[in-house]
Image (cartoon, rainbow, N blue to C red; front, side, top):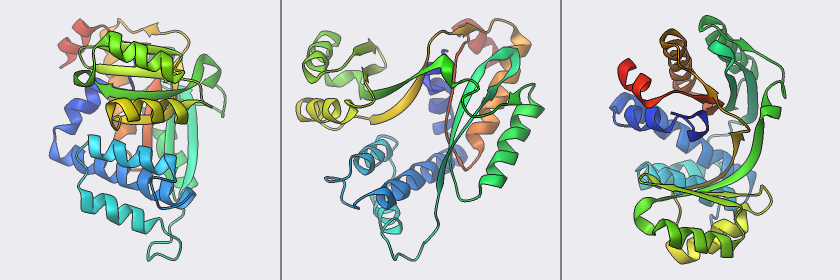
Length: 250
């Protein structure tokens, strides 16, 4: 499992568990609320909100939960909570570089919890930009494999202005520049329908293999703790754990 897959396999496993699904729903709803607050509450006029809603639907977030999250983001609503977007950077066990993105209403609490997670699992939290130079900031649009063949998706992505396409049996990942994400997403949406997700993210310049069982186990525990934090939205890293080792660790 590579870090730039955004912990995908583990998220799928966790998503199948009711307790974890509740946390995922809360994170998706929070992103919808923040997106609605950051612009118009109309997804047709607010690309970030549209992407957040699409991400929610891809995870089967109920429609009434989506509608409620949007209403909470409208100025003057009963919920006037303000969330700050915060990025934490640091090193996990084995020198793995990690980027943690959060939406929080209490920076001190979240920073303390994230720092504690790093420390307890053989890592250390660094300053902003302490590891982000090892990553590229990109736009990413994802579709399930069923919407198109790899060749058809590649052709459509090139026409839309995308930079790269990665297709496998799990789906299609279309890579764009940060400033062309919106137009590529819109062009692909017109052809294939709404994507599973469309967002800005980070991809590592190089992957660091993790072959030692104890290091991999500690790293996975750290990722679990970070993902379980209510304020954390995404965790990305430059690690690559072999499939056989993941299977051995269960």
